[in-house]
Amino acid sequence: MTVRVGVIGVGMIGQDHIRRLTTVLSGAAVVGVSDIDRARAEATANCIEARVYATAQDVIEDSNVDAILIASWGATHEQHLLPCIAAGKPVFCEKPLSDTQDSCLRILDAELAFGRRLIQLGFMRRYDPAYRALKDAIRSGAIGAPIFVHCAHRNATAPAHFTNDMVITDSAVHEIDIVRWLLDDEIAAVSVLAPARKTSATVNPLFVILEMASGALVDVELSINGVYGYDIRGEVVGEIGTAALAESNPIVVKQTGAFSGRISADWRERFLRAYDIELQEWLDSVANGTTTGPSTWDGYAATATAEAALQSLHTGTRAAIPLRNRPALYQSQKADPSARILQEKPR
Ligand code: ISE
Image (cartoon, rainbow, N blue to C red; front, top):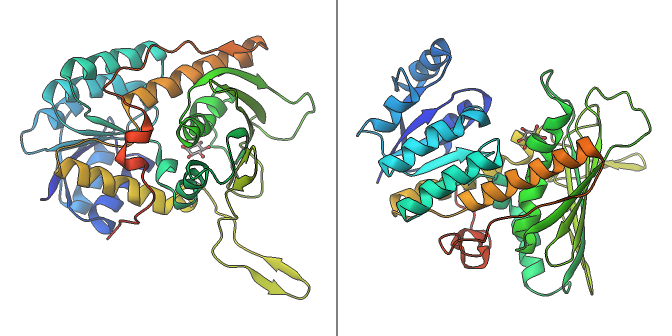
């Protein structure tokens, strides 16, 4: 089956997903696009011979569109997701689910009322071969019960519009999601610290501490600007051993008494395969009439944690995260087939 996809939002990540759907993956046709910038939508549509729609609503309502990919600004997601749910159309939605907890809950309630999952959220790290191997190591029991997780999230440069709050909502949100998934646990509280020492970075580095419901502790260093490259690090310390992401470069060059390797320029390079696998699994699940992967619940939990982290950043106090009870529709990730160990899929 070819899934006919309509894309809402054709900025950087939207274009990257269209390239992937049209030239890398199998089983998809991008039949139409919309964007608040009509000229940008037309330029994109011309390259792939797709239709341009005047509004996102037109994409969603078209009976020639089987599934929707939302890659517009996070604050617009609710206004697109609610009509997708009303139309019963499967959606791949880039992170965040929405920019506020209240908005996430409205989306969650709409999907619950619909009665089955329709939304797969774009937390691509869950599809990264290294993160999947890390989860497998934890689940195997090889390192015992996790006690600490050490993470670092380092970006080479931050775009001009990047704010200190975005360090939490755009960047830390990935660690917020990945530790919930790795440990199959919820986050109970968060504290955010900013180093008193001044740096030359235009966006402040931050240090985030997450307290998991199980009692495990997570630290996340966020250095989003002015670092040597894009470097994502993660180490889980268990009761009897540790497991860590290895260096992500595929080769090591040794020469005149030194060794070196490549550091990714940005997330599109570092998580290239993860993005491919993520979207291929989405297409396959749409074709099978199911929805897997990061859910509306995961999006709500991530945004609720990010909101509490912002509160901690601005008040200097630890913030608790009172989540709703988890509805049965959003079963534990243990039972989610997308959490299975990697079968690399892109064809
Ligand atoms: C960016 O928006 C992303 O989503 C990247 O994955 C993340 O690593 C980066 O820090 C964000 O700015």
